[in-house]
Amino acid sequence: MGVKISASVLNADLSELGAEVGRVCAAGADMLHIDVMDGIFVPPMTIGDVVVKALRNKNKDFTFDTHLMVSEPERVIPFFAEAGSDFISVHVESNADIKKSLEKIRSLGCKSGLAVNPPTHVEKLFPYIEYVDMFIIMSVNPGYGGQAFIPQSLDKIAALRKELDNRGSNAAIEVDGGINPNTAPEVIKSGADILVAGSYLFNSPDMKEAVLRLKQSREII
Ligand code: DX5
Ligand code: ZN
Image 1: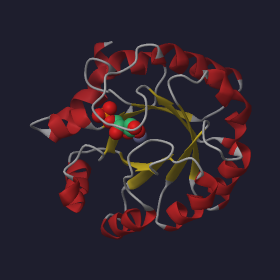
Image 2 (image 1 turned 90 degrees about the vertical axis):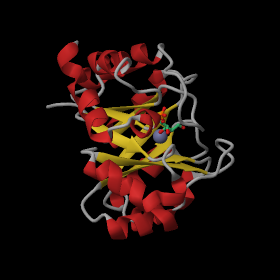
Image 3 (image 1 turned 90 degrees about the horizontal axis):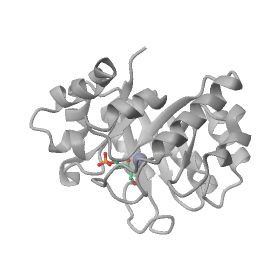
Image 4 (image 1 turned 45 degrees about the vertical axis):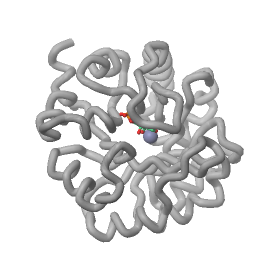
């Protein structure tokens, strides 16, 4: 199975958000990556559940991949589930009870995600494997699009892939930050299943072509 692309709209023209979501859908992205920031876990404040709900009303079939960069995710998980998220991911560095949050996400009918920041050891994820449908390895420090990929992330992806295989887990590995045609091949080789791409897609003159280039990265390894 090929790699999937989750398009991050953080670097889209947010004054035209509806049209931008339509554009990534038409370009063949598999998922919409929604970066939710609370101004505490990371400095910016971005998109809330009300906006996610409005986008969902216009995009019934697109997979919504909600990435909560918030310090107290437990409180808001139900709002983002109700808004129509398919995946909801919390950060292992947040103040939440991680196991409880992941169970809550699943109990609301969504897929559970667990994200890890660049400075945090990947082993911190291991105790939660059975509660997780998708891991997010952050390959930039969270908060902003358009940053350079941190090469040390490759070892974390490989270590997680090995642990998932050893434990017989089907959880997916998503990699978030600094993905472009130069970084994608190594990321896929290390074991990623889903690539988040933001600025690369939105800076490309032809977004359809850009999605295809990322998807075909596997073939040039
Ligand atoms: C960073 C966000 C990422 C980011 C990816 O805090 O979680 O999803 O928007 O953007 P690029 O692809 O530009 O690194
Ligand atoms: Zn993200």
